[in-house]
Length: 336
Image (cartoon, one colour):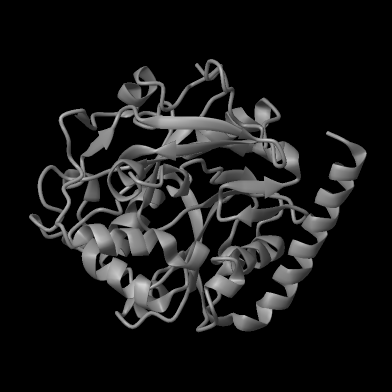
């Protein structure tokens, strides 16, 4: 990488950090339990809006995995989720009615909270419909993974976003609070993915799956990115640039091996497509707070009129992480 590009990225990182510092004024603290955080705790960061039905299972899932403390930014919920989160013993909560889009889709808010509270901690940044699966997750807690990453001097861990969906109509089976959403949305595309290098940030850009196949079949280049780096040994100098797709410094993005998957990686099971999807897509389209003029939600709205079914004859039903490794969607790398 040339010296000029390196200098420009350092300036950009400085600007994002200053921006996050300024955006702190948009956050109102509701519950602060950060005094309970231990030096070795794994921290989870999340923005949410009207996701109460998902939160019970989400919290239980990551507590069992080994997360020690949760940070939530609530963006104007009206379904009781803010109140629910405020009652949890291991959760600190902030609220804001400021523009999600103008916060760079929540990145500014979380960058600030990570700058302030996450220095020196392993941090997991995910949405309420994302569930991390990593090598040996059925027998080893998240702490085992972060200990191995520390011992290997690895500061970031990637996970491909894997869209999960049911067989049949999306609204055939109602989702109940506390239920594992993968019991309903248990199918995924085992292939149909494209990869390319992002030369500026050195990350691997992934697109494909059912969203490209169904919602963006006429414009696949506009399909959502599936590459994410959700797990990072945080330093207050770091910033997320675009959701969790990429970070600065640039070296944190070099988490994939394009030709063989030798580097360890995981998968985020993305349980977006439940019976709640139609109303959620309509709400977010009306709000207009998402990327590129909410182009993703416009595509959802247009296709939902035809009652699409995401399942197809090439769909595969989820079993466990070893299945995902065999399919080449994740890798245990050198971790044995």
